Length: 484
Ligand code: NAD
Image (cartoon, rainbow, N blue to C red):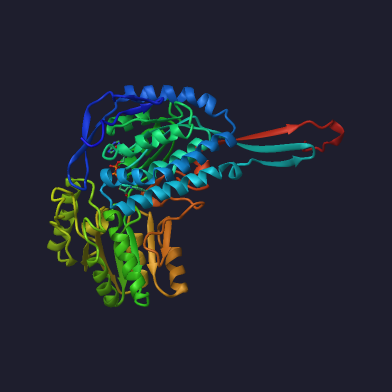
């Protein structure tokens, strides 16, 4: 095996999980590269005890000191950039350039956390004569972050720097499909000087997640993953009276108008549907062409043909994922959709056992087809046609999801019309992947997110802290009024 067995990282010690082990595959070539220990309640309990102990001194460390760790962590991400990107490439299957972009994004997230002391400086006001009220943020305690397979480095870093700078201790439960990056992050945090026990990694799958939701020693849970599991985690953790923010899956619609810039639209849509092999919660998976957009679709297919698996298109996460994606394509074809570019049965020379699906463009998909409604999570674009813009918006609005939506047009007025009416938390205008960069926050609407606020940016301050309001009076009675 290329990587040693992946164990839980609790209080700087590597410990076996309390459950079975699972093979870790590289989607690039289908080979087993490691093994991961899975955890049960027992391992979660150990991690909670360690984190609780660490929380007592970490929360009392002034934020200006806490943040120093993250200045160093940011430098270590840069110093180990290539190695971290290689791990992401191998365990997730995305191409190396995409893996590098992911680590670069982790650096940006850490930079934001380094500005936290400026952002959470409290507020103070004389609320009555001689009486002041001050507002302070306090950490919650031990928080857990449960993450998906598609961004093994970046999504953990959506939560780690912000939650820890704000004084919490954390237990990270990464996806069991991509466990290697998480332990490397733990190594770097240690090297950056993070005290023992403040950050812990517990590996596992369903049983570990259920233990996190149930453990009374965990104060808050953030979850990023599919809507099905987001609902389970949101309900179970909230019923145990924890603060929860659970981000779910997506079905992002791009509305293309006939006046859109042909080249910009074609290359943006192609990149959005195929980037990270379509395994992004921000991926364009449905396009709605309004009126006659045949000229744009023709160019889009030309752009998609330039995307070659194993070269500028990575693998999907597993053999099962490849089969699932190909089944969606076959079903759509049977139901009468027209396949303009077919990525089924793709084999990459030299990596014949890798899990690849080629770029796929399907036209004349009907809104009621399964491929139009469900999250496919592969490099597949379903094109639907509408006669009017309002009809296109109606199709977008009918999705139960609401992560992102985009409009391609040269009309500012029409772009604004769509931006106001699309039922999604992140909107792109002539941008296929409208990820809001720091200090703006990341989060969708509807069944793409359960809970209040967003997971990154300034919004995350409310997620990871609780407010204390202190009202004080020291002045002599003579200087007060009736409100005092
Ligand atoms: P997933 O829901 O299968 O897994 C996410 C986490 O939940 C993992 O840590 C996994 O171990 C755990 N888990 C899986 N099944 C479980 C169960 N039955 N009970 C309890 N825990 C369980 O998601 P995934 O396949 O790893 O990731 C892909 C999904 O994540 C897609 O739906 C994608 O859209 C979504 N995603 C959303 C965002 C967002 O910001 N909204 C970001 C990234 C990924």
